[in-house]
Image (cartoon, rainbow, N blue to C red):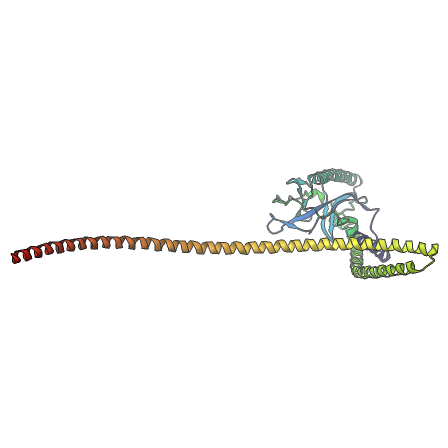
Length: 385
């Protein structure tokens, strides 16, 4: 896969050169790069972070030698998600062990970066302070020069127009995208920069505006060509997959050819040399194919594992709901049985009382019958005498 990405980059660079799009290497160069997850403050709430990249991307410091400014730039694919010019009034704040932020009043937002380790954050913060001081010195020199010469500065508010950046020159490879940053905390409100950053215009502002408008038009054209080149390189991925299938067929054909050559009697050194070359080619194709198959299997396992976890989660959630419902049903049944038991106890007590009364009444009747029997016996005795 990395080899395929390298081919895509080479193809894109060739298309850029063929289309006349040139990266301004002499003007602006990356001087420090790192990888981080990028966030921006929610423009509505000004409290919550909104992720602007799905994975870790390359964040780079750039230095423009002609304008003497420093910028922080990051691309996600062909989209610029950070484009911040460093000014003396900016401050990079470390809010947690792996997260830092700074406010950009020109962009009217707050940027946040989640790093994979604290060392990466400290290195980024150190470079931020270094380039901030360099920007302050450059601004002071520019102001001194402007006061001495009494000429308008060539830098204006439109000086933030960028040279076209390619994803290859900034985002690097995908090998480092597996790290997960620490979740950001709520940031402070963005602090506006001093109005000293706005340099005055003079009678030449009209010509400066025309100059920047022309540069903007040229940059738009270059960006359009770059986008077209990227789309074309993406479309060629399908063609490369077809070529891979053709390579597999070629490998099978070469296997058969080797078998045929082994069957030929009286092999000459030339045939042996061809066999060796063919075997080497087959081994290379097989190793490349095996590597791609292993990567495909790994991706499938990750997808299946994620699906399995989701299924287990849903199953456990359903079982929990069923258990809660069953528990409520059992509690209701228990309450009903308790009421029935209490009623049964009351009925049993009443029955016992009535039985006692009946026994007492029966004892009285028996006593009366005994006395009656005795009386009858005496009467019989008296009458017989």
